[in-house]
Each structure stands twice: as structure tokens, then as C-alpha cells.
Image 1 (cartoon, protein in one colour):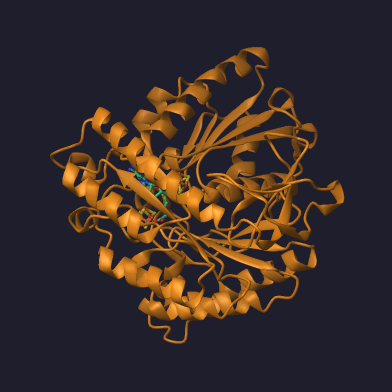
Image 2 (cartoon, protein in one colour; image 1 turned 90 degrees about the horizontal axis):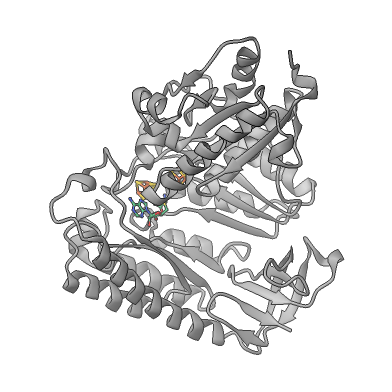
Length: 446
Ligand code: SAH
Ligand code: SF4
Ligand code: F3S
């Protein structure tokens, strides 16, 4: 029988930053339990797939990946296959057992991932397959170890779950209600990250603006809020850049813009998901703001920090979106002039209100709209990037460029990618560069 001391694990992650960080935590938990990270999947004794179900395309990719893992079982019969995360939480037990082809040994939802070592031990003892998608998180620890992928940028959870129930979105069903993480635990983590040389932190939550609201609802009137957390995070020496993901325009007050504008470690970059530039669609999406509210935030940001970059998320082809509604989105995008937009085809998610709404938009129309939106946004991104030509910027160096290993890549405070001629010892450092080239998706300093 295998023992965990000589066992190696491999994690494949799909999905958002939250999942990326969950995988770092899973690795940290397995390290603490005595397992070793495998250099590649073929060396692994335990393979963990961290799943996402935000869109159908993600799910299809993941089922394909899980299907291919059957071959690993044939090659190495003792290998343990575990699937965890959002998509596992979403499925009914029956569906999971039917789809998994009986070759997954462990299926865990988003609330039970810290139990992985215990379940691996049980499978090693002959039990299985084990499915635990229980929503009981009463013993979920505030502090968990993590094996971080980067030595200079780190992600830190500040709030779990989401209460918003945007009508298209699966997240509230798979990540549960909002739970703020203890303020002191967050600050302790930030300080220890700074002490270990981390320069940039990303504060994570589905709606970071809700930080502390759950406590205030329970009557703790003195509970800290998101602005308190940002101010405190900025006071940690050594941390040079503070980012957060995601914020919700409904909860993004003008006061919060004013607070951020006074914090140089944060103020150069805003990601503010708009979703649609049509008020009728925003209402049907249950977003809780209209385009006027949104524009007021953008104008305040530009008034306070004219050089700040603003990016957004947009969904095309939400049920009931007519050509005229879509045109309003194009017009509004033209008005806001985002530095970049992450654009998605609306994907019906079973169990969400929008999935059963009448007037679903045909796929070919959605695709054509996405193309038009992308063309417009690319043009705007390029123009805004061109305004950087000749400008001096500070770049946190990330490493060799993936597309061309003669160059290095890094990011400005405004989160723009910069490609430049660098040195290996600059990785993890902030360097001064002058922008000499501008493309749609990146800047150059050559
Ligand atoms: N909590 C974050 C978003 C998480 S999901 C927020 O509210 O900003 C990231 C993005 O995926 C969303 O902003 C949205 O644009 C997109 N998205 C979510 N559900 C979707 C769906 N059913 N179809 C297409 N895009 C979707
Ligand atoms: Fe989904 Fe809306 Fe919550 Fe974001 S705020 S996770 S889009 S329900
Ligand atoms: Fe996907 Fe879950 Fe993130 S559904 S986008 S991994 S919160």
C-alpha cells in the first residue's frame, strides 16, 4: 500500500483568481500533511482538478480533461483522482456519479476542500469513491497554509461567497452566502507576506465591497468595512501595490472612490464590471445600478485620478437583448472608454433565473455582437495605450515574456502589460521604464 510520505500531488486549475488561490491553499494543506508536489502530471500519485462552472465552455473543457484522465488510471492503477471546486458543488450527486465515469475517487465541493488529506487517507485505506458536497462550513478555518506560485505577488482572501444573485450567475449557488474573513487574520497574512518580500497583493472576493457587511447585519456596528481594510493594507511597509477583485458598481460609493484616490498604492487601477450598457438589461440582470450611476463613478475616478486605468466585464446576448439594446452597450462603451474589457457570450446556467427567461438570443447573433463589441473595444484600448507613448512608468517585473523569450514582461501600476529588454535579476523588482510602443493588449519599452 502507498503511504503519503512518498506520494506526489499535481493540481490542474480552471476558473478565476479565487480558484487559483484555492489551489495554492490545497497545495499548502497537502504540503503540511506530508505530500510532495509533483514536477508533472505523469509523476503524480494524486491528481486534483479544481473546477469552474461560470460558463458552459468552462464545463465542457473540464469534462474533457477529466475524461482524458481515465488513461492515467490505466497507466498507473493506484493513482487517486480528485475533482474539487465550483462545478462539483453545482452538480447533483446523481449527475456527478453519472458523468464521472466512475474513475474519480474523490469529489469535493467548495466548502470541504480543507478535508482533502483526510479523504485521500480514506481512499488509500480502500474506501471510495467519496463525494462530499455538503454546505456545512462551520469548522472552516480562518487561517490555512498556502504554497504560493509567485515570490513577489500574492492573493489574499478577504470575503467568501456572494449575496448578489445576478440573474445569469451561478456563483452564489456554488460559493454560498457572504462571509467576511477576520480582519486580524487578513492583516497578519499581509504583514507576513510583506516580510517575505511580496510587493503586490490582490485582495480577493466575489464582491469585495461587501467586506464587513455580514457583521454589521448581525449588529456589530463597529465592524470594519472595505475602506478600513484598504487603508490598513496600505499602511503595511514593503507592500507596494494593493489590488482587489472584484468590486460591484452598486456598492462602489463615490466616497470609496475618494478614499482610494488618497491611496497611491491602489488608485491607478480600477476593475468595475459593467455587464451591459442598457438599463433594461441591467435591470433584468438584477445588477442594482443603472448606466447613470455607473457613469458617475467613472467620472469621479477620472476627476480624482486622471491617469487611472479602468477595465470592465461585459456580457453580450443576455436573454431579451435586442439589436437596439446592444447598440446602447456599444454607445456606452464609447462613452466610458475602458482601457480593456473582458467580453463574454451569455451562457445559460442551469438553476439561475436567466436560464429560463424567454427570448434567449441565438448563438450566431451573440457571436456577431461579440465580434462588433471586441472590434470597438480593441480600437479604444489601442488609442488609450498610445497615450502612454513617451511616458515614464514603474513596472513590477514578472519574468520572461511567454511569446518571446528575448524579452521580459511586467505590469504598470495601472495594470498594463509592458514588454521590455530586461535582466533576470530584475524579476520581482519595480523598475523605471519609458514607453516606446503601444499595441492593443500591451505596451513596449524597447
Ligand atoms: N464577482 C465578479 C464576477 C465573477 S464572474 C463580479 O461580479 O464582478 C466573472 C465574469 O464572468 C462576470 O463579471 C461576468 O461578466 C461573467 N459571467 C458570469 N456569469 C456568466 C454567464 N452565465 N454567461 C456569461 N458570462 C458570465
Ligand atoms: Fe456573480 Fe453577480 Fe455575485 Fe459577481 S456579483 S459573483 S456576477 S452574482
Ligand atoms: Fe468559476 Fe467558481 Fe470562479 S464558477 S469563475 S471558479 S468562483
